[in-house]
Image 1 (cartoon, rainbow, N blue to C red):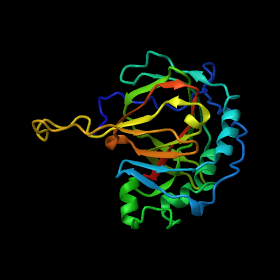
Image 2 (cartoon, rainbow, N blue to C red; image 1 turned 90 degrees about the horizontal axis):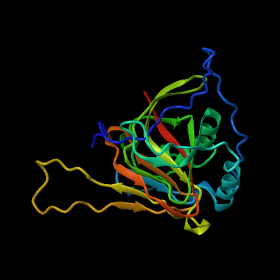
Image 3 (cartoon, helix red, strand yellow; image 1 turned 180 degrees about the vertical axis):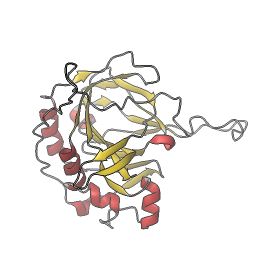
Image 4 (cartoon, rainbow, N blue to C red; image 1 turned 120 degrees about the vertical axis):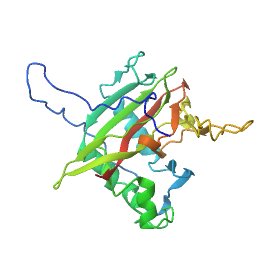
Length: 267
């Protein structure tokens, strides 16, 4: 289903341009904590929750690492999104920090099990796909993660209304630099009911707008797929023209912390 003319997520890159100057200066990258401890790669695997649409990795990060990152991320200058979004964008109420950080994106890609799982190098933890099937699933030759790193905090009462994630054309710095486009959203959950966060589930709506020609009388609409929060779980879902309608439900208690990037394929 095409997300054209539907409510979308605002995906603009962070701007640091001085109005008095034509030069744009990138802000310094945060001093991100080390990715320690991590569960051994041999104990991790991809799980296709919705074929061709949603893939998860349980225990991608340990609870200790997630706790360390929540503590660190709390010190960053987060900004609250406006309750009245621009025309065409979905309603989202949360606090966020956004930065272009190719080094952190590369660490998240190669310094964890993610690269080997996605590329099928870790055969035991992959989906048992051929090279051609992997290319079809991910939308092309996967080359890394989007350098645009986003940190989301949802407090009690905050949410992200139903929307589609659009794709972006990006450049992954080299050498050599790679021109790429994003094909799957990556969400890394740092909190869950175990940490006091109630609500905040990610909800997907399969076939939410079936065509009139294919819709039969008394045909049941597929039930929403609710993905509950798990500390350290990575969730990947397809975006762009094949994105599934989805939302981040309201947080009822505690705080929901998420690290966001995107899977990139060569253009």
